[in-house]
Length: 141
Image (cartoon, rainbow, N blue to C red; front, side):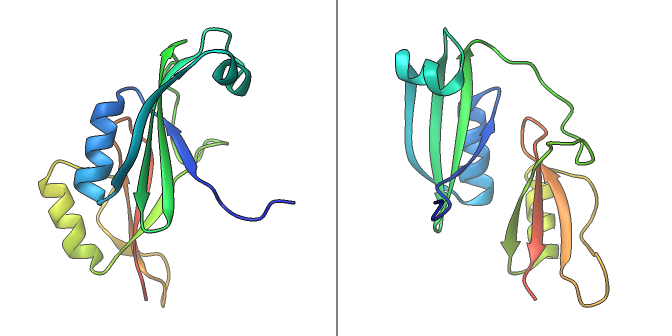
């Protein structure tokens, strides 16, 4: 029986760049960074020559795992949110408009300015991490 959420994970092209983004621009705390290779990680990933760099980041009780495959190298895929299997994580901000402008001023790419999805719904905006992984900024009502 599944009892709780452990972590969510993204595969990234440059672990150091991604850790800096999630730490410095979103506010995650770095829990640990390590390399994984050998029989165990090969069995988990299904890749005979798997060698990974991994970071675990915390934002409150939420753990995000970032993985960079040193071997075998992967390829960039189309992360458009309408593609089956595409995913995103939504983050709350106390003031979406202010946070949007601050993040935009630091070079974060947004798909558009914050808007309310429907009457009575919070203002939201999609933004992209350094690999183009979609993320959402949402205002709590």
